[in-house]
Figure 1 (cartoon, one colour):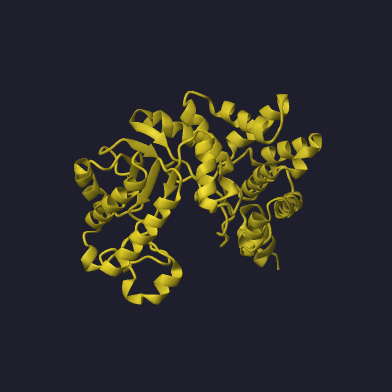
Figure 2 (cartoon, rainbow, N blue to C red):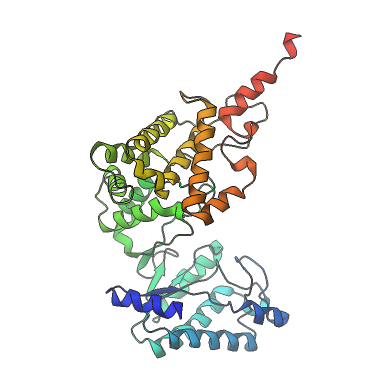
Length: 379
């Protein structure tokens, strides 16, 4: 019911409807009942409930489920199915798997078009072994039923960009807040735009909010500057204006240095090269002091948590470790209040992944701690 209503709402808004669909997954209860159907692990990212598509009974069940889905949805414009992530099978009956993938997907495409004649079929070799990508590149030109390729392999069909490298997973899947990649996203469009027929951006959490925004903004106009897109985010989602919006944009555009932690074995000089890290935290503190609405804006706290995490990744700066630790705690508490699922995700991480919680794990505090213990020559 929910899928039908979401589908209908998208179409009613004048947009096109696309769905992401696995090739060989079915309901876990059925999977548990039929161990003889289980897909074999190989070079593919299998998750629970994947079956071997070369087993006739499993294949019959797969298509029964697919037909129920296609018949029940009021409108579909695109169906995207990757070769893996999730899916695949490493058994001898399925080898070589790219051929099995395309053979099963062709049947699925025909079934989809029975109910939705206008549908476009999108294939993808993302996360497959390089050799499988090469095989797909050779096979796809002959597949008239395929309309688009989602990112890989290049050069065979019109390409829909999948935001590679992955914006959602970069630097810890949100463990340290967002990791804005605005300059990289813009650079990717400048390099790749002539090859693209569209963009398919998705998200696996609120920590990817800024990258998702930037990816679609640059898709609309790749000539925009990083600062312009960052400011649009600050104005639209942080509700800032004037100089405050410009300062927030400066912070957004400057974030994204990889977090350096968890290496403390006598490494007095190990840390991220990020001299403006503390300055960004100070800017965000000042903004919060002037605009009290930011207290209840989870997007602000995502930015703040990232900025504090990056400060803890540096060796030194004007802000004390106590101030940074207090701000990290404040950000986690605010996110627990405003976005409980994400707040609980942070709360359940190992203490070593929480900025400043374990002094030995962060460059900002571990260097001082080691120097404090280095008393052998003082005795």
